[in-house]
Length: 429
Image: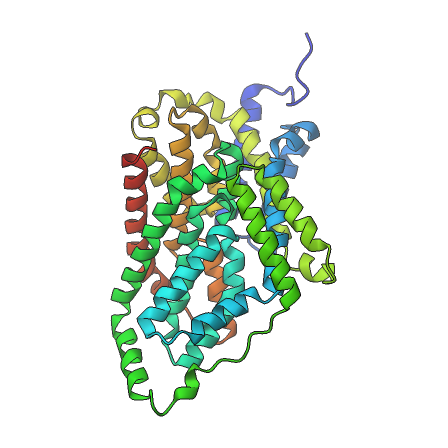
């Protein structure tokens, strides 16, 4: 009888132990973020884990290639190119200049910063929004003499919350969108209300926790209104008008096609291809693509697929009572925990075997998207967007401490996640 060449012919028990060991070490070092004494990053860790599985003949090359979801990789790659061009066009500088030109008080500017970060992150990958907007928000706070911490935390948490709304909001949603086959418009219809409510909660939490500093800034602004009118003046944004118009048109068309139900990976690649037909030097664009993230995705697809085939299949997930009775609570609770242990992208991939046996698959996938994203607000290390804001601030000699972020993150994550669970549990449309 012929054997399936996909997997090695070693004894099943031995293969399961090998797979579990490689998987466990891979996720342990992903949680740590490095391998002690080495300079390897998370992308390298995922690649080493996948290579070890191939070397131990747990998977062959064909099976490894089939386990990588190409639609996810293509969609993320296409979105990275589109957002790179949007950033090069000066769009984010223009947006921040518009914020600065509004004659609003400290709370009004905080609300506007959170809202814009959330809306932009819903359609453009949230990490890039934070990369582009953090130095601009820092400059805005300097010129308006505002307390910088609430605005930085508002930018990070607002971008995380806003990215809940759509498939293209963040990398983990991109994975969920392609694996679940939920349409773009359906995804947005179910989760955009959660994002909108979350942004309101975000503003309320920050306003209450930083009430004293925001009030002091408002009083100082009122006292200096006649003597320091130049504080509101901002330098003209550096934009490339032709490229900006092209980017806005292509991005708008891309989003419209997403909502129209066209294949989102193909649409994103087509939009990227149109933008590449330009006079901008390609290396400027390629420099902004997160190549390590793409490598990590590919490696994790392989690692998780091997674990699913050789280990998870023996767990009899169908018999888990919570899977049938309360999938939203189960998925959301586990997701918040795992996302803060190993980061949200690796955590999301772990849920694929569980999703296969949950009866209410769409609701479970949406709960995973919601909770894994909102979990990123719990700690400073919860999402890449948070780290981008923290590191950018540090380069400007502003320290955003772990405890300071946690003070906001704990109540914010708890409240927004509970709202998300309630929304998905009680609304059916």
